[in-house]
Image 1 (cartoon, rainbow, N blue to C red):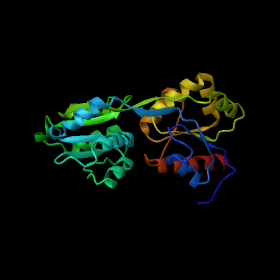
Image 2: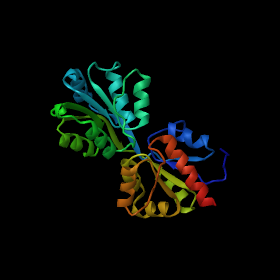
Image 3: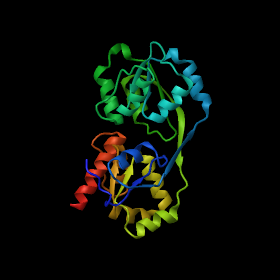
Image 4: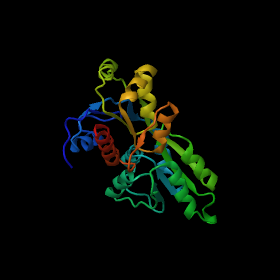
Length: 257
């Protein structure tokens, strides 16, 4: 794919450094980047997750909705627990697990909570009623997964595996880029990134930013958060960082044309 250095830079709002995975994907496509990490990922109180993993034999499933949840569990439980089935929301989480020798039994075709619940429902048996499910999640996890599994008849234990919090941005620098219309696109990899960037910039500058720059969301849930704030997002061709980067390039090329 040809390099396009003349395109305006792309804002990365996820918690990563200049050599982070999304930044690398964007740069590999020739896109300049701006790091505006609106969220930060920090450790949670280890007690609840440690206790849940110690009782792993009582669970029938463990459900991972993010790579951060995978990392938190692998730090405490290097080997896959025997007799426990594994579900992963998204190919990235599944890949990390498989690289560490964990079998993955269920991955929905689309990386969103509704698809995960639908995939569970399609294979649900009467004998699955009452099965215990461990769901290590973000401090800001939406209730969709836990509620959906509960409706199927599972007993869900949702444990805070990591915390998602707002990050301290250089707001003056961000506003300078916005004022001169220097941003080509803004990537959002989570609803929290939308919420925290809007909070940090304030309503007026957030509106000004997205009136001139394309918003690109990794999935439908993130796109809905933008829609709730009056902005239409382009949803990534696949709910992966690679898909987010490729879609961003396509959007910028279309804008230039």
